Image (cartoon, rainbow, N blue to C red):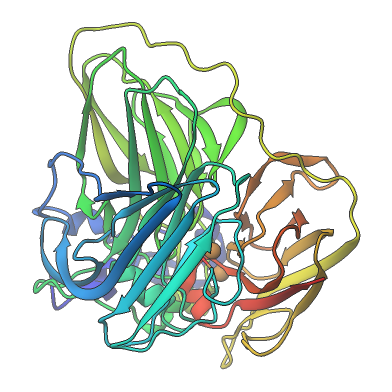
Length: 487
Ligand code: C2O
Ligand code: CU
Ligand code: CU
């Protein structure tokens, strides 16, 4: 398995969309599909263990002061690996603060390449030593971050990960990520409140993280091992008649999660950290890389119920890419974890009828922009935004602080790109022409050949930051741009 590792695993069943594209080529290419990764799953260690929670570090008296040391060597999927960890574990500790708190992180870089830290989804300053994506922490160095979480910050589920351009995907794929919670003062009727940080990676027989081929990188790598809190297919035990808050974070580099839970509907209470107006029921829930969903789970009668991610076709590079094994449709279905319901049958407790009111979308728009995501085919294979590749020194958009803008994100390529903006979460107008969604989010999937319209309040914080594709291989390949917000 070690020697044949990545390339063999990277093939996947041919999706309908790709099959149509491939018809002209006869059976040749189709025959290359169908080598599912399930054939490699047998004997993967870790399966069946109880789900554990990362160490929880909570603020006190308005302050959370932590040192995060990024270094090689940690348990992953139940075995020793040379993966990278924060403070010895992957994921790193869960950081929990309250709105109005100060988060101080000393980031120590003990890996062999530059890194930095991003507080994904937080509406905080992007400047200086706050959530600044332009910081570089060289190997052997450290950096002191101070992040002031505003007093009116929505409580919810966020996460942290490295953001050093060029190696973001590599570093997350190698294990660097953690949950970041803004605590609420609510009394939700839950018996348990847990983090499920989903990541994927590929390890060889010796426990080394395997880098993708150039073609797979362009498609956006998807690891063979899909992990929850660093564990392979862990088990969550709970009894009927209880309620559990699951904070699901899609921390995968490229994989879109299309979630379902056997025997249950999914009751969602929050998206990207922000409460929905009321609990919403779904059979399936799609989370792009970077997205989070908080669920209320009320276990059904005794039994084992798999939390599954179904295959999701996010498009591909086109015929040449697919022929070279770089197709990007998610393989699967993949079991992430199992809910083991145990105990006497009991009626499901009622759900809360309402949730705290989400932020109100502003209705005055001062400027409109169109932003185009494209992938150039042929020799260039560029991943661009508005025809350009990322340049940290260039201002791509200048925005006046305190205004609300409407951005139309157009995707001219053959694959989906999840749009993400730092520091200023947005409201999605779905479908175009309707009023903005009540809920703010910070990642939205822009379908291949499609577009989405966003309303973005550029409030509270001035400074330069970035927007990018959250298929982090694409971001590293240049699909990122800057926004400068000033008074
Ligand atoms: Cu989670 Cu700029 O990223
Ligand atoms: Cu982010
Ligand atoms: Cu992309």
